[in-house]
Image (cartoon, rainbow over all chains, first blue to last red; front, side, top):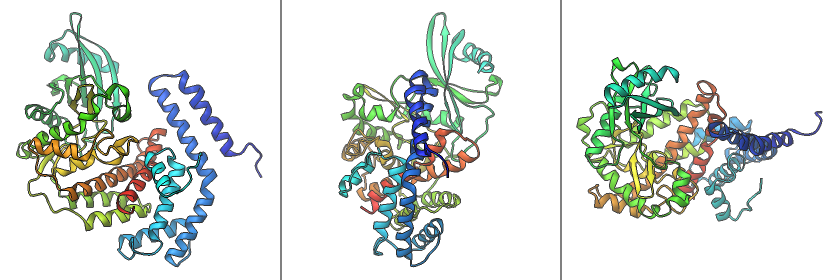
Length: 131
Length: 325
């Protein structure tokens, strides 16, 4: 057992340091890179916080959709193969919902301020999270 | 940088009508090219110029046309009425600067966010989509026969090329698999009249001022293909910079782009094909981001490269909105 503060807390602190102290104290490309680095740490913080639950949900959806078991990468590769081979498509029950859920889950980690993501949440009646 | 000052000073004296240079600044470290800005002085009168060069003359990317061809494209485009920077000289071996050319520096804005949302360009935005259509129509009048080294590709060949690139990444992305099926099923036929297309006509490669488009930059992936490719790429969501309801670069409507294109002599726009090229555009930028992971792990281990690699997901979402809404 590792002691607190936990990884997301420390990542958030380093991101704040880069964004609020390093970026304003520097100029040009270095300042830009400090902001990019802060955003990268924030992305990793969100993945640590949201990833385990999303991975489990995605794996459960894939097990039901594909009728087989395996780890998440194996199941995703099988889904990829079946779509590429034309064995399943958007008329297959559950596929569209699965792809939407996975696409939105990635955006919640990668880029939650992306305009098309916010618009998709609103259109689908899902609450906007503030992470 | 110091090593460039002496050969650039000689170049300024021999070919650019100056007697000294100053203010040498590197603007970008592209994968295929270096871009530098400097001032050519004649007495105390400064002319700002841009140097594009590949130091060893090495072609890093197979897709790039090469700097000598790029200079020829700029000159031909200028003659066809396309706003472009004037080429001032093409580098020769005796210049000691590798392959490249020097062109006029054009003042303006290239950052997509400022073009789509900035107050300074609010007056220009309502006219940009139509103007882009007119400019593309002029680009598409360039004679492919004058540029025999440019790549030729049908829509189906372009899709196959990106599919190969995606598959080489060996990481499953079901949304891209679905997209490739869709693109293949709905693929337009080979164009009746293949045109010389710019290939990367979008925010970032357009120099914009309050008076509109001042220059079309970055001709390094020009090729000969379906002219709709250029119109669709400009409408790809990635270049809207958050302004979703302005599909043309975050500043205009498709109908304005198409009207400008047709009025300036472009072929009639096939609406279904236009949609296909928007889907192709999101796939293309998505697969380009896919390739960033390999680049990050080998050539460029920068933070910036790592986060661009994570932008595939934006394109997957855009593709879901386009083909699985």
